[in-house]
Image (cartoon, rainbow over all chains, first blue to last red; front, side, top):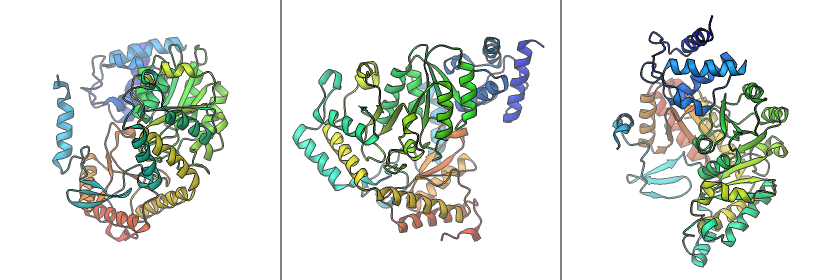
Length: 83
Length: 402
């Protein structure tokens, strides 16, 4: 399984845990518009992913995350750094 | 220009449609630390943060009046550009002595104290580690600076430890930021455990005692005093707008070489300094806080009375008894109706809605004051009970506090 697939699986799992997997998840899914994650819920969601993947996404890197694809990109970079 | 606020405007319209505007309450008059007139009616103030009730302390008022008469109404500029008044320097020394620190820097608001301190202390290449439930001023201070910002789970020393481990190989200073009492739920930081983590990682630790100054500790120095860990706290931030009954903020510490902070902290340098009246009333309020330790005991008893009364009435409350008592609401609509009906019954509380609350959950937030009488607290509990029953949040038979 590629890093991207692994990260996507964790994202789907975290959304399920939060009860927010309300639409099919694709790389284009928007956190705000499709998943209705407000700013605080999005931060908590990202924190959950950080724990699952044992990594850190600095807060200034979060501004660029609008879609699941953006999130996969940031997490893939951060997990490969952590490894 | 304002088009992007359309969703916010619509949200606010929904909130105000149920009655009053909870974010625009305008009192006709303030009668005391515990009562005001609203729309011609007397209301009990249960959401002031006026923990020691010092806003109407006669000595504080007299000091403020005398300072205004002697030095005028304002400083009309920053201390860097327009100079320091004698009162500013004396207040910093008095505050440092009270806190058992070598130095203190005074800011014009508590918000600016965090803004200035955090953005100046942690620079490019450094790391700020913030509790997830931190006050907006802490987040904004972090945003204003150039440090890398990492958020850890609220009150979770293990999560903080894990994140510090992940950052261990990265260069730069690590500054952990906590609050003594968290403003929304009234819960305290597990400070001893956090200090352990700080020691292990060789990090710095800043505690914002905004809601715990004058409230916790044998002398009112805050959570660090209450937990016996003051020596491990590198920076203490706080405000004059709660227990000390005025406005302003500070950062206190033991580092000697701090003069550059005054010109590096933009929120200190580029704003007008506190006016003589406030400097005088705050200085006097520190004397009152030291001279009247009984105020803390009354405050504690008042918090316990309110907490116990609401619990006996059947409400499920958040944190342990503290001067902040928060009542979680099942949903936004109920929270708004509850807040309006309480105000109709003559009790003013704070309506707190997401995303400003932990987990985005709606809350009715109360803060008690040492100036509240037991009768006033019982009146509030009765109003809560009746409202809770009317809205179906508690059963009618459970109103033991009535």
